[in-house]
View 1 (cartoon, helix red, strand yellow):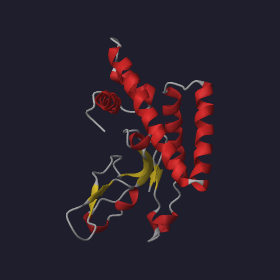
View 2 (view 1 turned 120 degrees about the horizontal axis):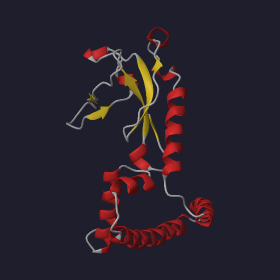
View 3 (view 1 turned 90 degrees about the horizontal axis):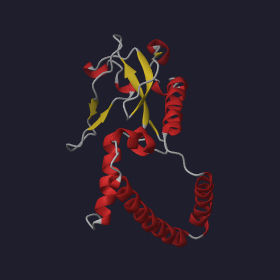
View 4 (view 1 turned 135 degrees about the vertical axis):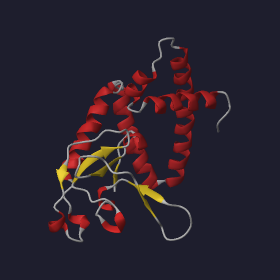
Length: 195
């Protein structure tokens, strides 16, 4: 189970495991049954001590950006075989507070734009229900507008002689390398390198 935010995969959250010594275990690779497509996880339930895996002593909220929250003990005797009864409210609240802190550090939208985006989302949700073909057309129009705006903004960011990827990452709510990738993506769009 992962938690989603408006920042996409840069800030996906999950309930991670903490070993008795306080360290975080290495990822567990799960065999889906056929093929070579193994899935890695660091979610707490994979560290039950079965199949030679380490046994978690605690859980905590974790984020794809590297943030880690406070530890909450696991009572394995009380859990038994029912991992779905673990109370993950504490880790979730910690992660949610982290997301709020990320949001606070980002560059704010002008109030009018924020209101307009909320109105647009409401209209588009209704359009999906009432006229899905029109909603698809609107999505395409918004995609064109988004690409154009992204290209212009990326060009302006690149032209800024004071650009620091760390600061831009904070402003966007992503890691510095993700900010750099976003700028590069839009610059390539403008150069005709990506469609």
